[in-house]
Length: 319
Length: 255
Image: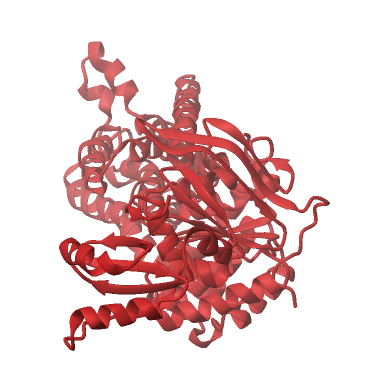
């Protein structure tokens, strides 16, 4: 059984966007954005709400037309032949667009017909996806009555009805509980292992770090950094993070004896300090506190830190 | 972009699949409405009217109410249902992730509204034919008229649906547009006998008047030259409004 298709194009680049811009009224949603998604990778667009992620996706599958720039998917100019491009990709929207009165299987069949699938292929595909996403247990119940996790799995299953070469997921796990997120991530990894190229958006840094080979950090409609999650972390910040609450006044006294000043980042009262080896810093804080031990978190530096460093929140000690 | 019929048909299939699940709560109430008028006005009020337009009053009502049934079938579909699919269910956004284009969405929806008007009008016709109120075979000519009436009211309804910002505004459409049409379009009384000749042209603007006049002619078996004007009105107004809706729906779905 194959749920997805490996690339059929000669070229190893599946999506190529060059200097794409899109304006809505006064707001520049996407600003001279360029990106390349290679075959077989999981590529993440990472950014806060309103960063331009969904608009970028909509331009890639040819529903929103850019004001300027050029997008090729499978080597085809999306503006020239959007039908041909969309026949070969699958999209899961941020909001599940299910027909709530119908069962899971009926939803899959309706969606398969949008791709002009016919029997017996239509039933075969629906059956495969019901098995893969474990959607069979509810039989003919209308999906309105089913859980949020079930509906999300079904929404992703719909976008696989045409055996896509490229799977586009807009915020795939937003609003799901942690166990469901883990389960969905493993499904997405399975699809990737079958050869699919995956392009997803998320504002969860842990999701990007676990799933993506490459991430593009998007802010204000621009790509402000791009690379493998581990490379982005290594390039921007030290390996370990110590995180605790402290006021700016206390901070300057506390770090007075430490030289050179380490990289650090503040969000309200929360202070994050980045060092390759934090043991001496922890000792220093304990001495400073003199028995009144404050709660410290020591953890590996992650994409969240890189993101905060790149977008807005000032990161002293890092240029 | 132009319409791809197979894709438009897949949109039609979506609605048909849903309809098979929900027709009991969907078709029955709307279908009974003209039937209730036929019985209450036709038999109740008709008892006091010896004849109208050369027939019994209930027989006078029958052809007009067939058109009303067709009008209702299309109207509910292209108002509330399209609005919900467009705004709440995001059904068209999902379709547009597949090779379906906005033109196919519009074509599929119009096709479906026409189908529903044919189902409503057809069922109503069956009832009046069984009741002996449809002179056969000439009244059968009303059947090809049903999809045309459906097309006209689909085009008008979609135009309204694509303009409004809130679902509450449909009460204006039904109460201040469709209900007056229903009451003043030759269904209950011969309009031209009640209007002075200087105002007859106003009646000609009413969309329901035209299918009703054709239906009445087919029931009485009289072909009149004015029916050509009625046909032209139906086709021209439908085409004009659909051409406009095409641009509107494209902009709505692709911005």
